[in-house]
Amino acid sequence: MSEFPFDDEHAPLYSLGQVAEMLQVQHAFLRRLDQHDVISPSRSSGGQRRYSRHDIMIVQHVTRMTEEGMTLIAIRRILELERELADVRRQLDETRSRLNGERR
Image (cartoon, rainbow, N blue to C red; front, side, top):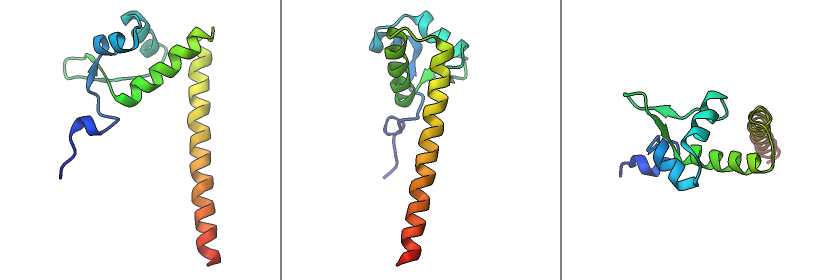
């Protein structure tokens, strides 16, 4: 059975207007996130921003941080550190799995 685009959390399916309405944020806020490289949504062939479900979850996270008074520069750094931490955890899990496999 083939996967539909809406099954893929990274499929760019939602317009800027749809995301703004879903999250109750201003269009300008979403544009500013893109301008500051906090989130970089995909672009349609016509150049329109297209967001995935994954992007939308990140925008929600960013919205909470801005409500706590964080700047976009700080938020961008936090997101970078969160990605790095996730990578390190994944590598640690892989190493543990390999070591456990060698012990058997």
